[in-house]
Length: 117
Length: 114
Image (cartoon, rainbow over all chains, first blue to last red; front, top):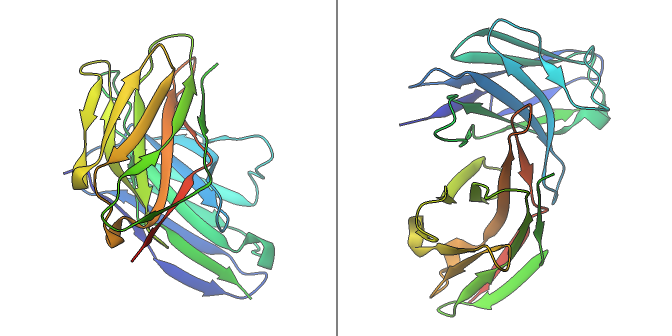
């Protein structure tokens, strides 16, 4: 149980275009979803936290107009990279949390490799 | 404030020998602690978690970790390394004051030599 999927797994886009990445919790409802960015050989960097039906909370230094996050339902969150540039190329990972204080475990998706040419 | 420190950025072991990946934490109270593994170009998989029950925690693939409050440590061990264990390992503590998120260690890359 507790499976999180991401789509697409890899995407290549041209500079200036926008790309949408989907994150779905397949067998549970996610109170909160998280979006991370990971540079090569580095740890995960939290970009934003989103709760269903409310605006995402972005970490300091993350441009909210560039990385649009929508959390329309308890099982789906999307990250849209707007007007992508080569420096946005990275590995993006989402995770989901069921909520409640009995467990703080996040369940991670398999990641999306974005390459901007 | 909570934090985690992974003391080694790289660890190399020979196949069949023990693995030790070190993690120290800082917390004003007894935290939950997690170890995750990440294989190349993959998401994170939970190896094991400590949630204030037993201090010796057994996880998947033969890994275990011991929570030592006196040493503020949560080191990950495995008696005998396998080639498939080569990956990046992250020690994580959840931050739960006012908001909720994960605090990640910087990661330890494990290399297993044939």
